[in-house]
Structure formats: structure tokens, C-alpha cells
Amino acid sequence: MLSTGIKTPIGIKVSGPDLHVLEQVAGNIEQVMKKHPDTLSSFADKAAGGYYLDFDIRREEAARYGLTVGDVQDVISSAIGGMNVTTTIEGLERYPVNVRYPRELRDNLQSLKRVLVPTPTGAQVPLSLLADLQMRRGPPSIKTENARPNAWVYVDIKTGDIGGFVKQAKQMVDEQVKIPAGYTVSWSGQFEYMERASAKLKLVIPATLAIIFLLLWFNFRNMTAPIVVMLSIPFALVGGFWLVWLLGFNLSVAVGVGFIALAGVAAEVGVLVLTFINQAVALKRTEHGSSLNREQLWEAVQEGVSRRVRPIAMTATAVIAGLLPIMWGSGTGSDVMQRIAAPMIGGMVSTTVLCLIVLPVVYGLLLQWQHRPCKTSTLPETGMDTEEQS
Image (cartoon, rainbow, N blue to C red; front, side, top):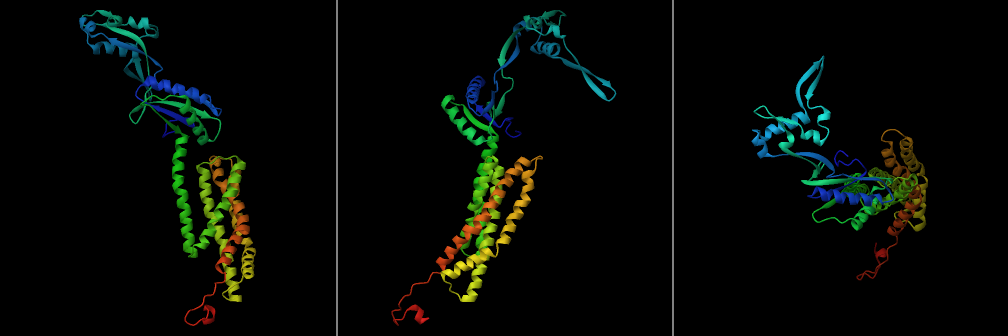
């Protein structure tokens, strides 16, 4: 609100040169927003809805009595508006003393016309002989952005899905409100923050995945293992989305941050699974030689996973146990923290189960493909195949 100026979740800013046209367009948008089923209230600024009393001084009439425009304006500002003439001191307190006409002499237009203006000759001239007094409508305040006057429409909504509401509201405004040439409509409020965060997340999420993949490549020094480990991230997203849906949370910046943190922890679990499988495969190779058949590979995969279930479960349990108090909290900021913790809790449950069941199968198939027997080829010089020559 401090940066956008909008006090409601959604605000509509209409920009253009004419305040009366701005008021009309903003009023039309207000009526359209009230028709939306998820609108709680809609209110448009009255860009030209204030009433003002204008004093149009007649210069020729003032000069006839030996007065200047400034003399007449001094009487108007002091007798009607009031003027501080001194300050009273009461102990440590200071109060200004303001002098002006009593309220009964300035509370209506006829009384103001009878305000007397002293002339240099000592005569008192009624203000109605020196100026025309008229009531006119004007802007109570003029809002500007980018050097253009604005009229704002404040919209309060019932739902928490700001993005979905704005999408439907934009369609309704485009279909039912005619925007004159030279006028623009922009959407602000919390929706503006959401758009900024969405643009940043579009850069942060791919960068996070790229960094995770790069670190995995530095660890395994091949392309197969990092690709398999990255499969644990979709496994984690399944549980995260389910828990977010069950709790009734909408996709927000906090939820996005939770999924980013979940991606790192899920990759860690995937690394544990592959590391233990590689250790079991290496142990099998020392026992049976460098080449392993299909049954030996699957036996090594099963042993690597079954003997290391406890460390993987402990990792997931530690993460979940650390986040459960956040889900049960109810203090200040707990609503934001719950949306960060929910994807991680749900994701750790699904990634633990799927990484212990699905990921070993995928990695086992890749190991089987890598250890498949090579076809023999005949050497043209000796007539012996490759295996006999070796």
C-alpha cells in the first residue's frame, strides 16, 4: 500500500487528461466491478465531485474604490478563512490565536456577500460589489502518476485468488466499458506485487534448477546420475501440491519459496538413494568381476536401497519434524510461514516414498542398459573377433 497507494487488495487506476472524463470512466468501471460475484465492495474516486466557492474579483470595480486585488484577497483570507494573530503560552504549551468572522456571518452565500471591505477613504464596501461569488464543482484532490491525472477505483474481494479475479475482471471491463482515446487503465494493489513476484520467480526457478543440476554434475561427473536425481523433484512436487490443495492455500510467493526449498531437499534425498546404489554396485563388482549380469545388478540395487532406508527416512523425518511446529503456529506471520512449510512437508512425504520405490527402478534400468553386453565384431586382418584377440 505504501508504494502503490491502493488500500484494497486490488485497485484500478484510470489515467487521462480530463478529470470529468476520468470520473465518468471510473464510475463505469465501479458499476462493472459490482457485478462480479467475488466482489465485496467497489468504490471509485470522485475526481470532480467537490464543491468550491470561487471569488471572482472584478478589477475595475475594485479600482473604482481605490482597492487592489491583493486588498480584497486579504479581507477574504482573514475575515473568512482566518488569520493567526498571536500565540498564547500556557506553561509549556503554546496555542495559536486565530481571528475571523463569527460562523453566523460566513455560513451561507448571502452572508458572505455582505462581508465589508475597508477602502482607503475609510468607507466599508460590501464584497458583492467587488467580486462575483459562485459555487462550482471541482476535484477534491488531484492524483497524478507519470505527469497524468488519475482516478482510482478501490476493489475489495471475497476470494483469495487475486490473479483469477483480475483475469475475469479485465475481461469484463474490456467488454462492458468503453475507454476513450488517450486514456489508459492499469491494475494495481496486491496484484501489482504478485505480478512483480511472478516475473522474478520465472527467473529464480529455472536458475535454481540449473544450479542444482550443475552441483550434481560436479558430484557424479556424468550426465546420467544428475538426470535421474532431478526426477526426485517432480516426485516431491506431487505431495507438495496435494497438501497445499488440502489446506486450501492459493499459489503465492510464499508457496513458491516453499517449492524452491523443497527442490533442494528432494535432490538431496535422490543423491542419497543413488549413492547407496552405487556403493552396492561397486561391492558386487569386487565380488563378481567388472561385468555384472541383469540379476546381479537388480540384486545390488535392492540391497543398496533396502539397507539404507533408515538414513533416508531419518532425513525426511527430521525435515518434517522441524516444520510441523510452524504449521501449528498462530502468531504474527504464521500465515506466511505455513505457506512456506506446507509444500515442504507434503513434498517430503511423497519424495521419500517415491524415491525408495520408483527412483531405484529407473536407475536400475539405466544401469542395466549401460552394462548390456557389446556385440562382437570381426577383425579383417586376423579373422578373429574382438573378444578372442583380447
